[in-house]
Amino acid sequence: MSTSSLFEKRAWKDLPVAGIIPEPGTSTKYRTGDWRTRKPIIDEQKCTNCLLCWVYCPDAAIERTPKKVMVNYDYCKGCGICANECPVKAITMVMEAI
Amino acid sequence: MAEIRGLTGDEAVAYAVKQCDVDVVSAYPITPQTIIVERFSEYVANGEVKTEFICVESEHSAMSACIGSSLTGARTFTATCSQGLALMHEMLYIASSLRLPIVMAVANRALSAPLNIHGDHSDMMGSRDCGWVQIYAENAQEVYDWIIQAFRLAEDPELSMPVAVNLDGFTITHCMEGVEVLEDEIVAKFLPPRKPLYTLDPSKPITVGAWATPEYYMDFKRQQVEALASAKAKLLEVTKEYAQFSGRKYGILESYGMEDAEAAVLCLGSTAGTVRAMVKELRARGEKVGIVKLWLYRPFPMEELMESLRGIKALAVMDRACSFGAPYGPLCSDVLATFQRYGLRIPTMNAIYGLGGRDVRPWDLSFLFDEVLKIARTGVVRNPVVFLGVRE
Ligand code: SF4
Ligand code: SF4
Image (cartoon, rainbow over all chains, first blue to last red; front, top):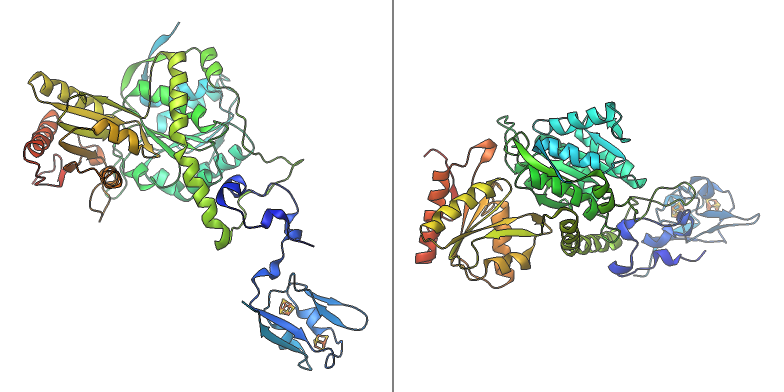
């Protein structure tokens, strides 16, 4: 989902008054992955699809398909728990380009 | 027909709040504010008002209840002072940051320790940066008029800001004066029902008080600074209109003798009465002295103050609070910063006075006027900060 216009960086004059969020349910539009500094990369050759990363990810940012797992980078915060838990070391954390 | 009633300052507050058809009052009693809450709860008990009176266990809760109430669009009032205002401190910022037009009477009282229940401005000055519009009244009549105007100003649809009306503990709160009150219908006409900026409404959900990252927080504060600054122009509109309803004209400040004054005293609140009497006496003796009293303290009326002080050779600023460790008392710091900003150099002294209810006697003021006249003659400030009436 694309970032709502609500979250575009506006000048102070154009921000909603008093910092209120004038519409409901906007958290679904907010990509919490924005502030990630390190990014998990899954090596599909090594992955055994054991789903441990899917279990451990605190942000439910690992998505599963019958054959493989994928990271949803819109919500992955880069904590590295998945890389730590992967029993076959299929996940490496790489620095985000600044 | 306007009617004159014998009211103490506190009673004048309660009577004005009653006429303002307030939806919610939440307050905790504290001397010398107590009579406001007592009188108002009598109105509630007698069915004279439709107000919901929320009893709470502390001032922190009082302001929290006011914030919740104001968020729903209700007209909301509270009153406190001293330790009570200090206990509210964190909630004051939330009320102003959320742009909630709560009106609060502050019955100015000293802060402990030592324990003291008498008047000074340490309470409000300790919270002067909390983003509220701050008004200081000189007597019970002004208190009555300012409470009514405060609701209109606070609830101005473009402004929507909380307003604190300050009245000196005991000197105003407990002294009975003749107060000319308006008829209920006149107040109702002057103060139409509140039209909130936004409200909590289950059918149109919004989020209030959300988390703002460093990338946004500062921009919201920038917005708030500008919003508070706009209160000055709004206040002038409100006071102009109130004059048509009441025949009494208020504004940003009031001066006396300033047309040709060479030395002036600047102050807030009830002391202005004594200073004005002294100015009259000195002028009768040919001294070119004057007084400027600020009604509006926040936002600080820089331009109007500069305008009123134009041409003087010396100024004494009276502060009824200490700003511990600072070069001057709070009001004097603001004045000198304003001089600096406008490139003005008026030799200025600061008099700390009246702490914990210490009386300001005529001879204290004659000493002050002697000093400021000396500065006007010589251009030299020998004592930048004096403590009026302290035993040496
Ligand atoms: S780095 Fe953290 S948030 Fe991202 S997928 Fe792995 S466990 Fe989830
Ligand atoms: S934990 Fe490692 S092996 Fe298991 S599914 Fe995730 S990436 Fe594949």
